[in-house]
Image 1 (cartoon, rainbow, N blue to C red):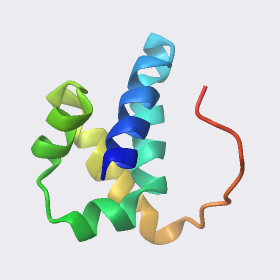
Image 2: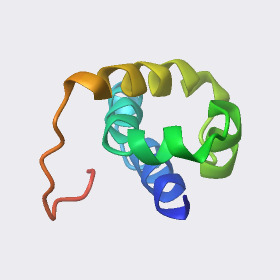
Image 3: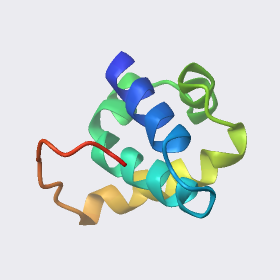
Length: 79
């Protein structure tokens, strides 16, 4: 889960203010299986990732969308 926390934190911290919610949503899509399997609440995950709790809706949207998205793995990091 440390990787998930780091990716969520980086998605939030390294994004322009207008892109933060989108990037948190994308990080949630990418890590949906790990997030769901962890059985941690969204609140716990956001707290561990040091992302404001107001982004729980973005995470929820990402988890719901993950059922319809195939993640293409690449070496690119979130920017």
